[in-house]
Length: 164
Image (tube, rainbow, N blue to C red; front, top):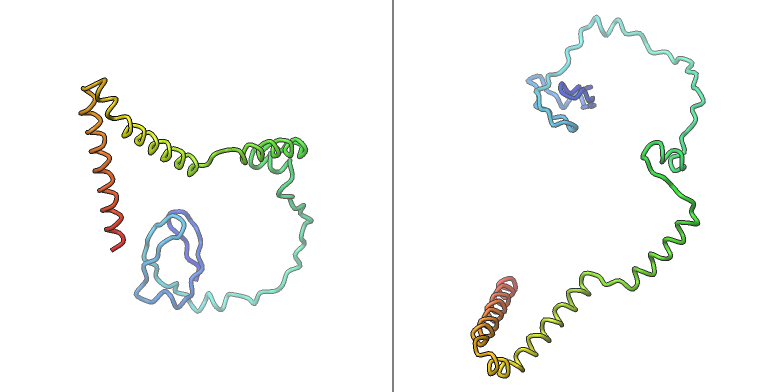
């Protein structure tokens, strides 16, 4: 049975046994339109009128196949401009050199963590000297270490919760 979507006119082939006499709710896979499909009623006259199909001599034209990856096709169809491959190889070699020396995301994260740990270590070692010269900073330094301790406790509790 051939179904037509009322909304987008897309056609679907469905087995005749899938649609019962009481109808069936179907949905277009293309646009999502839903409708109730009833089986087609074919009269005896329509069956008699049909003549057996005869094979016709079909003359096929020589259709030129488009080469999908030619410069002209890509430019016309997709708007891509392909340059000389030798120029691309020079650019690719320069890109490869940059990629080997570049830092990735995790490399930056590792450097940032090491930098923060070393700064907190230096601050912890020089805390007494800083507080002696600038007494008002003692409260801020203690608050900083208290905040770090809260974050550490929160992270360890979160990790322990997922382990259990």
